[in-house]
Length: 376
Image 1 (cartoon, rainbow, N blue to C red):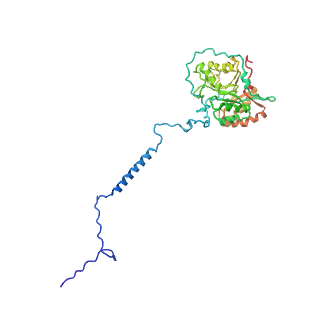
Image 2: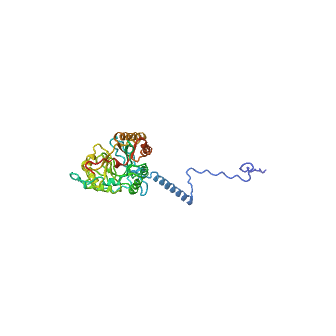
Image 3: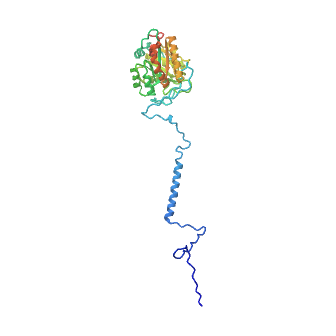
């Protein structure tokens, strides 16, 4: 008898037609991955690009190289044709009887070329004698007519120093109701134009000559210093006096050391006397030799009474204006000096229109000149 053998059913899911595929073999551990040449080149290129991006980011994370100092933005040099930078704040104020000497800006618009190195100190000799013997010709010729004071009116002289560098604030000072005495730094730009506008507005002009202070404050380029030879002092003064015209004299910018040096100040005052000019002593030191030398050279001289803005708070400026009124009532005339600070200009804009009602008359500097001893 032949036995019939039935073949086993095909492998697969129920209902699946056709034979079941044989299960795939498992890959052995450690078996390598085969890549085509194109895939390999793409991976290499991507790796190189990532490396380049990392180098770029690392190189631009700190644009300033270590060890290279950069100046603060506020000290950047002024580009030609741009507006002058406003002055920096002064050093801490000194007592009122000594005018402060730290007002000069760190950057000087229109600065003169660097001055020649100081020459060796020349032996001290008798100061030069004034030529001509006549004082007052130039200052009288350039004087602004003084208003006639009312009955029993006291006179007030208002001087605004340090003009010319900050054009907007200088223009604001020129816009004050006059007559105001305007003192212009000789190293400022466009002095002919600025001083002409001041004259048209009815203000008097003086040259604000930079002089050596006590301490480290910088009076600016071309300053008169005590270590210069007599010839260099004359040369620098001549440069300052040539910066514009129409002025009645000069006053000192800083100068607490220079104005206390009899020999050096004598050179300046003798030259002013020879030219027929006057001197406003800002009295930045009680040791000034100005009054005694002015008498020696028959030079018209006026001294400051009140400094308005040692303290630049509105309350302090108002107190100084009240002191000006007090000095004027007691002495008949008061000479006040201020600077083109916003707080000072704002206070003056409000105060000046009130003077007439209080019994004061604003007059130019030349109106306060007493007859020079022995002069004409």
